Length: 261
Image 1 (spheres, rainbow, N blue to C red):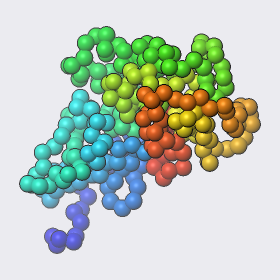
Image 2 (cartoon, rainbow, N blue to C red):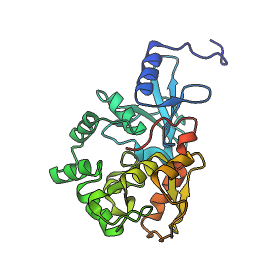
Image 3 (cartoon, one colour):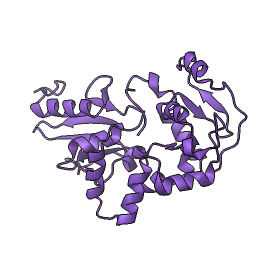
């Protein structure tokens, strides 16, 4: 095999491609590169000449690869790791769950598997993390300390407001999953738009609507084009920065398929 020739795709390659597609990943560009639907981790698939396979991702995305679902792979050669990349494989027995966690398509069974593999968690902590996924429990109480009403509709009745993560639950570490600064109280239809990237907020409270949002949505739901801004707290701003970079207007990015989670 010449240095310039590419290895022939193996059966394992086809299996991984199918699993990645099942998990909601979209293939982009040339080569086996797979991107997160909401602009999070980008996985690149590799295979050595001896058939061994692995994935690499940017080192800055390492916190999103939970050790209960992913394991680091030692470099095959000295110096192969690189300063800005990490080598990864899903833990045995939870391959599809690991991929679905990254893509935001995780099922209740996937979450149960993840929690079962977390030997570092006590019962109350497990319950709090599970409840936070649906905006309940400790997370909701913490959000209600920060937020009093829906910032778009002005609704004050909390019985009809959802507590949503600014940086999605799936993309947050344990602390971020429960951090009240990482949440907003929003009317259900506004929450859907926020989680899908159709709207976002500046740190000073200014509302931003996606350029790609159908104007009929604002008209039908009687949503305002602008609002009186209320500045966000210092604790909320880093999460909002992340949302603007990775979720806002994600619906028109080439890899976007679904949002939320």
